[in-house]
Every structure is written in structure tokens, then in C-alpha cells.
Length: 287
Image (tube, rainbow, N blue to C red):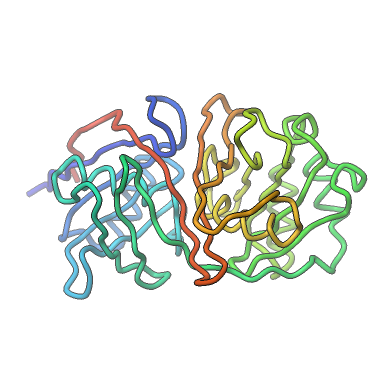
């Protein structure tokens, strides 16, 4: 007897269809891990989120790319919150807790925005040579100011001088994939500049994760969130205020502009991301 699985496709970090980052969301208790992998591969979005009932928290939440399960995904969590809100399982100005492979994550909806709390990470300056990687990205040392940091989340953060440099990157993903596999320092790449399209924004980023099946992501909460503390560390945020929401831009080069709100409380070490979302597709998957 085939299963009929309800599935939503939701664009996150945008209030307009066909912008931001699309994720699929499923709420189902009966799926095996192998079925989740097959569904994520069939849907073929950068992430599919799987919600299920939890005895420990409000919901279990798992994230799968078309190739593998990941420990954390910002945009698919924002999409999951939107799904729950549309299904009347999440109320305005309320908080819920997800049980995930990154631990229990607080999230919710307030003032018409969805939010989630991210694990805070530590940064260390990249010590090993990145010359080969820069070449594979189409980037010179001068354009990056030779300034790169590795986060404890396994992301490499590379600063570049301006938007032109950022938009003109021509990544060779085969070479990048080989370089990533050849070392254990980092697994994904964030390129950023503090020059922005919109004057109220704080930075613009691009994100590459070819070994997770994501060549380039249009809006990445797990990259934009940690970037704010790094910008503070680099003295690139003027007049920083605890809990103020700063805007990180992404996706414009892919014609899917997304805007990710990020707040950080340095006294309590609390990092959050914020965004809107819109449903673009509802259907039933038969497996």
C-alpha cells in the first residue's frame, strides 16, 4: 500500500515567491531514514526538512540535502516554522523547541517574522595556504586581503574587497570539491563583503558546499548567522548594539535575492536569525 506524504515547498528569507531559498517541508512520523533520503533526492532542493512528533520537545527536525543529512540548516528551519504556522501548529509571538542533531533549538514567530537560535561558534584565523582554493574560486590574494577565518562549524569565511569581486567569482566546483576532500579544516565556504546592495544591510555573502550537493545556495542562515559575530570581531560593524537585527544579503547573483536578519547578544552569547517565508507549492508525494 503506497504512502501519500503531504509536502510543501516554501521560499525562505523572502516574502515574495521565487526569491530567497526554497526548501521542502514534510510532517510525518512513519518515515524511515532511507525514505527521507530518497524523498530529498527526488525533490532535489538544497534541503528538505522532516518534522515529526517528539516526546522530548515540540517537534523533531531533520534536514537532508539531495546527497546527505546535515546537522543544521537555517532556511529549511524558517520554512518549517512557516509550515507549522500555516497548519496552525505555531502561533504568533510564541516559541517552540526542535530536537535536532545540533541539540535542542529554540525557534518561533514574533512580529510577523520567523526566528531561530543558532549555536554560537568560535573562529580561528586560517593558517594553512589557501592559494589553490583561491585559484579555484577565481579569487586573488589581493582581492581577499588574505583574510580568512575558520569557524568551529566547519565553515571557511573569506573576506573580499567589494561586490564586483564577489559577483565575478567563477568557481570551479570540481577543483573545489577535491580541495575540500583533501583537508579536514573546513567543509563549506562563505565569501563575504561589507559592501552591500541596500544601504541598511551589513554584508553580502555567497555560499558554496559542493560536497553536500549544493554548488551555490541562495540564502544560508547557518552562514549569515555566524558572520555577524565575525564582523564584530573584525571591527566591521559600526555602533554594534546587542539584540539589534542586522541584515545580511545573499542570492542576488542567482536572481533569487534573500535577506537574512541576524541578532547577537554578546552578554548572553545568544545568536538568532530572522526571516519571512512564502509557500509556493503544496502537494502529495506517493512512495
